[in-house]
Amino acid sequence: MRNKERACDECGIYSEKYALSEGTSQEELLHLIASLNNKNSISGILVQLPLPAHIDEKTIINAISPEKDVDAFHPVNVGKIMVGNYDFVPCTPAGVMELIKESGIDLCGKECVIVGRSNIVGKPQAMLLLHQNGTVTICHSKTVNLAEKTRNADILVAAVGIPNFIKGDMIKKGAVVIDVGINRLENKKLCGDVEFETAEKVAGAITPVPGGVGPMTIAMLMKNTVKAAIVNGTRG
Ligand code: GUN
Image 1 (cartoon, rainbow, N blue to C red):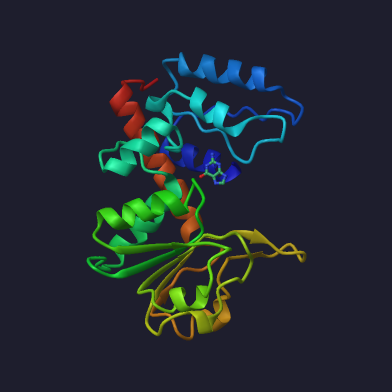
Image 2 (cartoon, rainbow, N blue to C red; image 1 turned 30 degrees about the horizontal axis):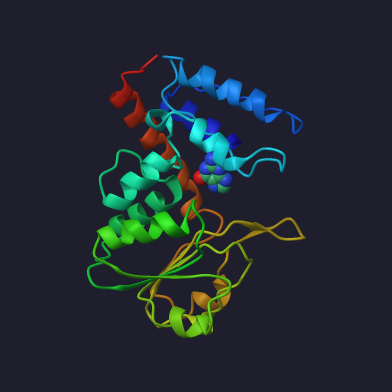
């Protein structure tokens, strides 16, 4: 959240942060969302996840106005992504697509394997890759013979949330490896879902953690927010 706030400052985007206590009730949070939905000077609303156990994530996401849903988590926006007609793209998958595009990687017909099936990354990532004519496989922690699938990937997106889960011997030589994982180890160091040291020896291109997908996610959030301001006419 600190980085998101800083990015807003750098882009000249006005932001308000509500650092609510863990004991905040669902009603209080819904009340705050309703007031921001109605506030014309606010273009975009983001509720940082995960939420405490006593708050229902779906209820909260559903309460955000789809026009201000710069995370693209609301079912209306999820549906729009599914059919390929969207204003907002979820920030992390959008960041991954931008990295692929800027690196000049052609996805047409390529084997794209995603490890992870979350609503935030895995599922929307599959749609975005599919829209670019990738041949998409979604794997997850229960996939049988996972390494067989990942070794088939021309583009491998790791978004499973398990530190160093993807090893070098699970990667095809020359594959593009995009590591979405951000895991904090016991020694406080950050690491991804890919074991970088072994993976970089076989990958054709690989993103580091930190410094790879993370900054792209924030850049895409800024893009969605600017888009929201234009679409909603809510420039304050
Ligand atoms: N928690 C982890 N990633 C995200 C994200 O992209 N958006 C929100 N709102 N919460 C998150």
